[in-house]
Length: 99
Image (tube, rainbow, N blue to C red; front, side, top):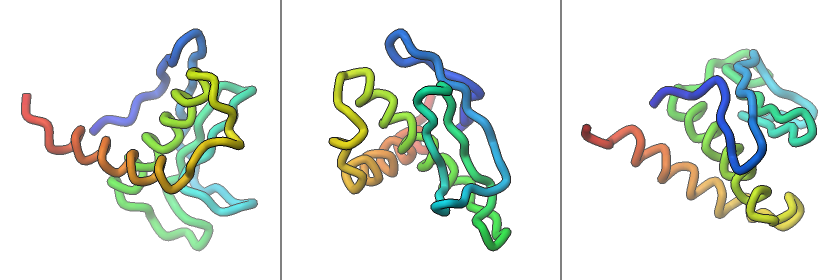
C-alpha cells in the first residue's frame, strides 16, 4: 500500500508527513485537525523502526478520525479500539487486493 502525501475528506484537505518519532505522548501517528495534517512516525521514541504494516495501520487510524470528524462526530466520541481494529482490516484489504 502506498501512503499518500495528502488526501481530502469532505471539504477538508489533509497533508501526511513522515516524521522520525512522535512523543508526548509516544504514538505511531497523530492528527492535527486545525493544521490539516497527519504525522506518521517511522521510529518509536527508542529509535526502533516501525514495520511498514504498522505505519500503514497508523495512516488508516488517523484517516478514519478525519472521516468521523467530517461525519460530525467529535474526537472525544471516537472509539479508539474500534478505530484500531477497523484500520487493521482496511490495511489488510489494501495489501491483499488483486487488480
